[in-house]
Each structure stands twice: as structure tokens, then as C-alpha cells.
Length: 513
Image (cartoon, rainbow, N blue to C red; front, side, top):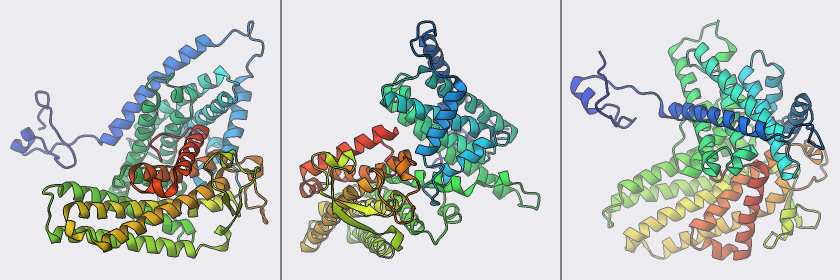
């Protein structure tokens, strides 16, 4: 019989799974997944905000008798918002790659609302939020857009709860897709970004993190359910998560873990099991996953050996092994880059007035890289960012050794530090010169692989793709002494301004990377 835990606040966690009272009685404590609790709390608060904002904005909408230009009908707004969303997020781009597959599955989910009720609502909510943001940027606000967006968002929350109850808490693809989209919703909706919904940017980032953690928690539940049930011939399609969804969530998870220096919550084999090993990005993704693990291990080890300041040679040996691991990973990444297929190659040319507005600002690179298409530029640019993180971790290891073992601070250590700084400086240049290829105006392609870029297709996705590499550069400039001196103050300011511009353009969060 379980004892009531009313008079005592237990401090239970994965590290301490039992409280004192239950330990004495020999009873195991079991508490819900904290990520799931966090996600459900965020959804409850989001529903309250949605109702409140809907009422405020509904009251503020002027009467048609006093409005010089009445708002278009709701059906027309939704149709136009969906078309714009599909175009800007690459849902209709005629290119197949892991960066786009998740968004390319959304039109099909929306066309089949009977089997995907929650995701259909979430797609409409996100499309309306994106359209509202566009209208705000063009100073042509339509108050009805946010009302409709919040209404669809609230409906999606209700459908998610209903589906989880029907399936005894075991999620399917539809529910997890909906949760992932709802995280994007709060970052895009203008009132969330401006703080009208309460909490401003901090609440915006909090909601994003809660929904992504919630999606990860739902995948963990689904995997646990699969392990407890035998996969017989009557297994339904809903029992497995769509591979396109897994790829998308894993990429978001790894980027978040690299930014937060935390350990990935999901195992690598789920990701590699759905990745096509022939794709150039597959090897890069594995390196990113391992780097997130190495960073978490490194921080845990340094915290455990913070004192005493003078440590023994065996302790130093552990860091030297980590240094060797990071150096080898950098070599393998260079080898990967050198063997990329010709379609992913580039050439450089002088920047011109016809390039993106970013290239006209002080500190912008004088030469830019030209790729076959913007989508071809993404894997290599992500590789540049990963090499910066590898070099930064090398600098962290060497600095830690130098502070605690002065005898190691010789010529070898200084040479290694200079080498890492040179890598960071080189990668900053590569990312700067690749920015125009991803977000800039259309370029002529010999075989049309640009995927409709001239028509503006995938603009939001291309903007999101450059956010993380630019944020990695900004992190290196801010936290690593010597990098800013090498890059130059004007280029450093340009990178910061470019990152701010792209974030404002796509509704990205401050800490998303």
C-alpha cells in the first residue's frame, strides 16, 4: 500500500528515485515524467492565454460600419494563409532532403483531417500565425488573423488531450506533429513576440522549450509502449512514428543540446535507423549527436574535478584523451567535407549590389559563396558550425589544463591553442560568405534544383537554416578571448546584426540557436 506523501515534500528525481519515508518502508516512489508535466502545464497556460487574448482582440476589432476596409472572410484568410505558409516553409518545394521532409508532409496531414485532427488544427494555427506576422512586418495588420490563429490553437490543444485519453496516453504521429508545430506557433505569433500574451520573450522561449520537451517525452512514451508489446501482424501504422517526424525532432533536439551543453534525451539508433546513410548529411548528424554527448561529459567531469586546483596526472590524462577525440572528429569532418558530391560544391565571387541586403552592411564579406541551390549550402554550412564547436571545446580543455597544471602550459599547449583559434577564424569566414547563398536572392541553376527559389519558396526555412550557424559564430565571438580580435570588430558586429535580422524575419527564439 502506498503511503500518502502529504506531510513531506520529497526530493525525488532520476538520480534519487526514492524519498526518505519510502526508503524506510521499502516502497518505490514513482512520479510522472517532469518533461511531460512541464509540457502539460505550458499547454494549460497557453489555453488560458488564448482565451484571454481572443476576448481582448475580439473586443478591439472595429465594427464594419466604422471600418474603411473590412477584413476579408475567414475562409479566404485561411486559404491564403495556408498557401503562404506552404510556400515559405518549403512544404511544396520539389527537393527531397532531411531539412524539408517534415514540412513537406504537412499538406497531406491537412488534407486528411479525419485521421489527423489535431495536426490539421495545428497547421491552420501556425499558418495563420505566420500570415499575421507577415502582415505586421508590412504594417498591414489584420486583427482577425490572430483571433483565428488563437482559436485554432485552442482547438488543437483540446484534440491533443482527447486523443491522448483515447489512446491511454500513448501518442501517435498526429499528436507529436501537433505538439512540435505548437512550439513554433508561440515563436511566430506577433502578440507572443511583443509580450501581449504575457511574459514576452522569456515566456516565448519557455513555451518553445516546453513543447519540444513534451514532444520528446511523447516519443519516449511511444517507444516504451512498443517495448512492452509484441509487434504482431496486426500492428497498425499508428504504432510507429513517421520517420520524417523523427528526423525533424532529432535535429531540433541536437541543436538545443549543443546550445545548452546537455545530453541528448533520445538514443542515437532511433535517428540512424531512419536516416539514409547515402545522404551527405547523415554522417554530419552523427557527429553532432556525439559532440553533444562529449560536451555534457566534459562539463560533468570538470565540475567533479573543480577542486583541488592542482590535480594529478591521471586526471589530466582524461582531458588529454578528450582532446584527442575532438581532434580526430575535426579531421573526420574535414574528410567528410572534401568528399561531398559535386552538387554540394561551391565557388566564390565578389559581392555585388544585387546580393541580399545583409551584404550591403558595414563588415559584410567582400566575397560570397555560390552553391547550386540554397538547400545544397545547408549541410556544408552546418559543418562549418560544428567545427567551431569542436575548436571551442578544445580551447576549453586546454585552458582548464593550463590553469591547474602550469607545467603543461608550454609551447605545445600554446601551439594547440593558436591552431584552434585559426580554425574558428576560418569557419567564421566560411559561414559569413555562405549566408547570402541561403537567404539571398535567387541564383540561376543549371538544372532547376533551386526548388522554386525565385518564387520565394522556402524563405522561412532558409532563414531558420542559417540561424544556428550564425548563433554559433556569435557565441564564439562573445565567449572565446582572441576570436574577436582575429575576426575584427566590424565583422563581429555584422555577424551579430545579421543574426538579429534573420531571427526577426523568421520569428526565431533568442536561445534556440
